[in-house]
Length: 454
Image 1 (cartoon, rainbow, N blue to C red):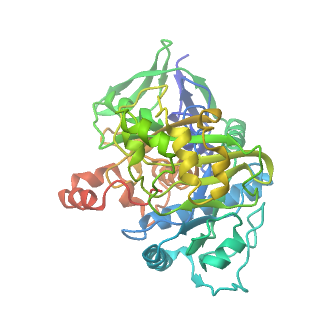
Image 2 (cartoon, rainbow, N blue to C red):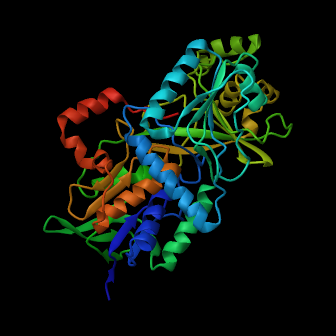
Image 3 (spheres, rainbow, N blue to C red):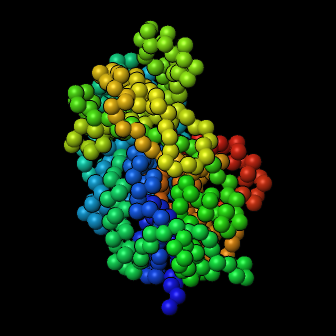
């Protein structure tokens, strides 16, 4: 008997697992087959910072609405699962030592507040009405953002540099354990009738201009009239099997996992982000060596702002994630990826600008572990969610580093497309067909691919 499925989902990262979960448990589609050549949640879904935020500056409220829906779903699933994946509300905190940087934070926060983030609360030096975030949990916490002046910021977040002028605390934000979330959803989906096939997709059966089946490397064919490609960075290659070219490119992003064996960083910190450019603190001898090494010369130049840090396991353990997206050049998708050999040391010296005690680890970059993956992006940094140009083919992709936080709204949206459900008012902004409009393409180029990215 031929294998059949109502929907075949291709890609078992967090996006594909979330879609399978929503189709089976929330929309009653029991015959869903999830396919991946690797084990679920092992390509890029376990490589990121596992964080989320309802902070999405401009150019309009679209991404803020999308991400707010996703966080709603994260909280619903946390309630249902007994918070099996340790969702917290520690927040994101943007820090600056520049007066103009304070003005920019204030202006951006007002903009995002107008989009629906919540109120901006500006505090005085004592910040008596500021509510610190708890180490664990997500219920009963404020939304919006708190702008704290330098002294108040240093009291709230011990260890910040002495010249910090202000910190902006985004409140509906924090992190979670993404693999635990994915495993919980996959278990529920399989219990509702889904099946997982470990195999590689090699092609698609098509007839009369629509999808009729999926061909696998093992020689199997699964008959179906609906496929959903949620293949992360492999999305462009899968689309080409349908003779489709999608407007996508890749950036390679890394993170450093470092053990704080000296305990120089408080385990109570939120997700801290340094907003200002950084000149790395090298010794005179190191600078001389770098000037004579063409491959190291760039380490002497200013680096962009955005280096960020968080504890890996909340109040427990001693590991830190340090992340710095200083290389945004497009990269071809090659697995496994290869990272800048200087990345660990650059990340440590960069984060020491915000947390000076991290200077204790100068020279220890090679002692940490560097991993990461590819951001598959559109040119305006918005996902692709909806039907493709081949009947029966759909996409959930271009989640550009916000897969853990954004897959749930995307899965919810694509499940509605697949089952004829009611679509939210932002649905048209994520359709692949939006690029058929020349005016939209021009507008997207003006916005740029770094909109909303840290």
